[in-house]
Amino acid sequence: MNRVQLKYLAIALSASIFPATVSATNGYFTHGTSVAEKGLAGAGVAYSQDTLAASNNPAGMVWQGARYDIGAAIFGPMRSYSAKGAPSAPAGSPCGPCPFSIGDGDQSIDSENEAFLIPQFGYNWVLDPDRTLGISVYGNGGMNTEYKGGTAILGPHPMTGTNFEAPGTFGDGTAGVDLSQLFVSTTYSAKSGKSTSWGVSAIVAYQRFEAKGLANFGPFSTDPGNLSNNDHDTSTGLGIRLGIQSEVSPGVRIGAAYQPKIDMSEFDDYAGLFADDGDFDIPSTFTVGLTVDVGATGMLFIDYQQINYEDVDAVSNSIDNLDACGMGDVDSCLGGSDGAGFGWEDMQIIKLGYQWKAGEKMTWRVGYSTTDQPIPDDEVVFNILAPGVIEEHFTFGFTRELDAKSAINFAAMYAPNVSVKGPNKFDPAQEIELEMDQYELAFSYIRRL
Image 1 (cartoon, rainbow, N blue to C red):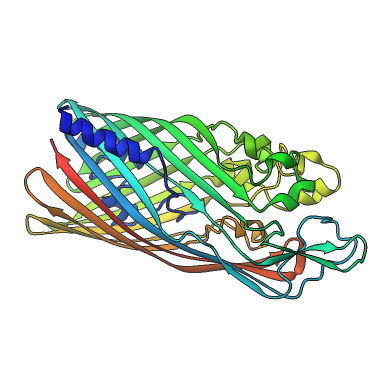
Image 2: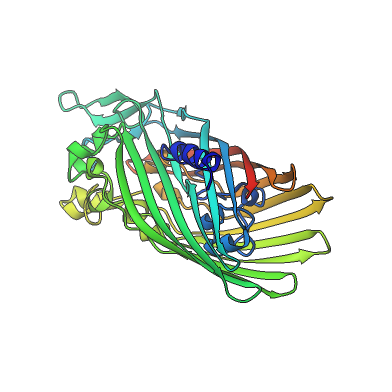
């Protein structure tokens, strides 16, 4: 590698070790990582097109040759919540001092933080005609909510018996969470015959998290001092991703990839928020797909992906566990071994894409994905913090060849508004509605070596 190449590698890695909040699209996993795959709504497990392939299927790296890809996306999530219905906050409610009602009457708040820059980088070395070694640096999920203003009713005042109102969504000022994830994958990929390949990625995972405005949940936490407003904490872990690709007949390719759950170190500063003393692992995922040539210039992509959010107690445990906590079951409290969480369910995603060549220099792409969002309607109140309710993505993209060794990629994504309504766990007389829609523009530069 020459000095110029080393310079680009250093710049990309330096940018990537300070992860921005990453696309919270399929829950808090991005709909696609590489810019080519983003243009296909994330499809491509059976046919890879750049050195970010390791994020989807490491088997695809061996077909990329010696090259690097460097790019970034501008991501815009628009999130809000509303609360409808007059607060009741009856005396003697089992919730005690935690927030009973969101707002004194109807309340609607938009989250701050609506634009994020997300870098990515990949580099592939050819060891011999049948083997490559590559590195891919990318973000795979995240969220950043910040709700300023609003009020909460914390229950009857101990002296007057009347409703006690405090500023902030949960009565503790500005509320929100900030989760960023970074993955550095080192990938070995090899051909097995003329049309089959396999690959394995060794993954170093890094997470960064902060929660604000949750102090009034302290009586329902195993560790109130490590529940909220402790600035950012970090977490690390090691994982693997396995994949295969094969052209089973001319123009027909299949692929599959699996990433087991990544065991992460605990967020010690939030041991009183996440179940199991601050444990927040990365759930397992698997993807299978098919790519079929259509005519002389077209390709059809069909992928199925499952994200197993139920692997992670902090994500999947129900807020209803606070009922048992209120009756003395410490394990069910926030931070406990069966601590309350966000109640998310596993996600199953169908991704469809089509690309076609128009002459020697242009490749065009369109895509669509669909899923059911992971938040049950009786879990909405805690998910004000993490409203990952998107269900559809519409995408468009292209590759423009600049010369024999370089090209640029572009992709755009629109995720239409989705809302989820349900009762306020702490005051069933109220209805909470979560809403989100999203936009993204992504660019990358390709250099073949």
